[in-house]
Amino acid sequence: MNRNEEQARVVREAERFAVAELGRDRTGHDGYHVRRVAKMAERLAAEEGADAFVCAVAAWLHDVADEKLNESKDSGMRKVADWLSGQPIADGERAHILEIIATMSYNGGANPPMRTPEGRVVQDADRLDAVGAIAIARTFVYAGWKGDMMHDPDLPPRERMTPEEYRRGRSTAINHFHEKLLKLKDLMNTKTARRIAEERHAYMERYLERFMQEWEGLD
Ligand code: ADP
Ligand code: NI
Image (cartoon, rainbow, N blue to C red; front, side, top):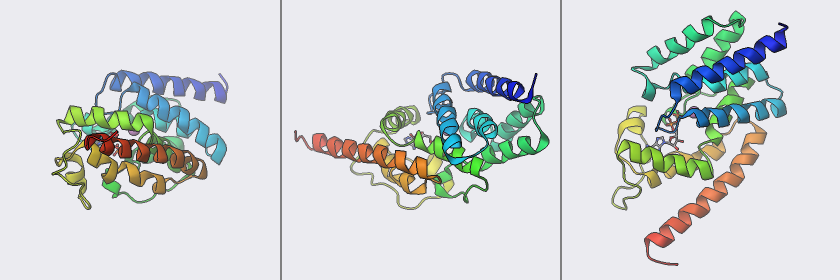
């Protein structure tokens, strides 16, 4: 097998592993979420000149380590590291993939900027799935899973919160737009993602306007 074939095989294996791990997760991180992120990461990598292999593997694996789906972030990272160590990947690439996965989460906006072009690409690809029509659907599914209401006018969006409050505090689906989704457009790392986010963002704003209009019993 030449290097390209070997890399293509690792990407396919990463896909199988991620889909088996995430399956029918209901927190917005199902197999189809990672599939969309991997496709978008490939597209952004090509446009931004980032390493397509590192981006693809990191994208497929990025939610396997999610703290919501594991006992702890450490045990999730260990699961990914163990899997990677069984694959024919150079040490530097393996460390790079792990670094991306460990640092890319939104985390209530508390994490520092990504260090490498590949990290910026994968983070943008993940964030783009939280902006637009699919993002709207994911947010309502997540709120239902968490036991939050879709909207509660007596519970205003939180302006500042610790990562712990962001994750566990009581909120609503509509608040989540203000607490996270509407902020993402300005946080994109790459030009391509920023352009895609602009249009998806405008669509979410139109959606929220209509939601409030109907909430008040208007047309
Ligand atoms: P990350 O892994 O980047 O920190 P999250 O796991 O917090 O992102 O969120 C993934 C997606 O799940 C969000 O983009 C959003 O659509 C949905 N989501 C996360 N937290 C909430 C929440 N508190 N209320 C509603 N939807 C949420
Ligand atoms: Ni994700």
